[in-house]
Image 1: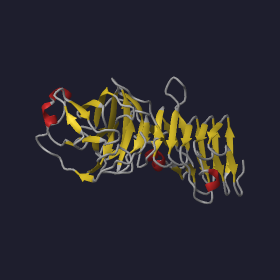
Image 2: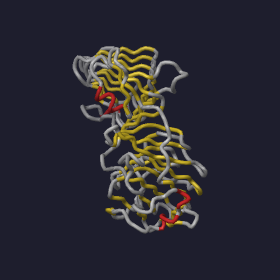
Image 3: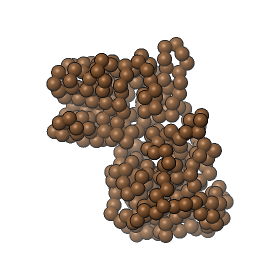
Image 4: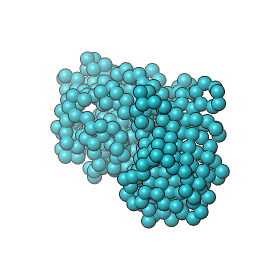
Length: 356
């Protein structure tokens, strides 16, 4: 659901004891740490009815997720045209707003269009829509040392994709909607089992698993191979690559679906002298970097190769509002068996001393 204008004052919430949710043991809800706005009413059945009209969104916020309890689910009982939003927030919650809108720091997955929202009034295409009877899930993946790293979303306990955690304190479950939506909450749901987002392999050493692609790329050294698992790897902006690495999908269709890299801006190859190889990926940009005089392109686009050398093999690249591939400065671009498009402005553009 796109952002509206019925936003109320931010509420800095603290966990509360004795909430009516504590009586709904059939949904495995905790007895404390639940907060709600006036436009969300608890039902005797254990569900939550959102009573606000039009875009007067009520919300329920649960207690902070942890390594011991990293996941929650919402089952849609009664749907609404503008959807139900689930996600994560910090201490502050804004009445009249869905998770992920710019009203307060949060991230949200919305049922009406399957969009992922991170601080914008519009969402990035992310997952499938959800309807009455569907279970929407949201969780946090923690490192072995207990550091929160990655947000995951599910539909009917099937993984949709991975998103880097926007902020360290953004760990509170939040659900929001308006009339006539009704949903059942399970704030103690068990996290489904699924494979790592990606691996980094150095030479003959054993590959190391990572919970999101941004962490893997940041940790990779020159010559490493970063393998992305099938599913959606989403980024609020883009993915900056500054070392000579290969980023590829899992070899063999029987092993995994095609990895889909989706960013609000472009994927940048931005370091002089590096050599980057992209293979077997679907890269989709929905914004575009409008800096460096590229406003006429609608933003840089899906892949922006400013310096170095980039080889693109068997990929699909598109940019909703900008240009698919931009090669600029002293960059050398090599592409084979790659589809570019659809794009909002251009397919491939060479600037300055770009070669391809």
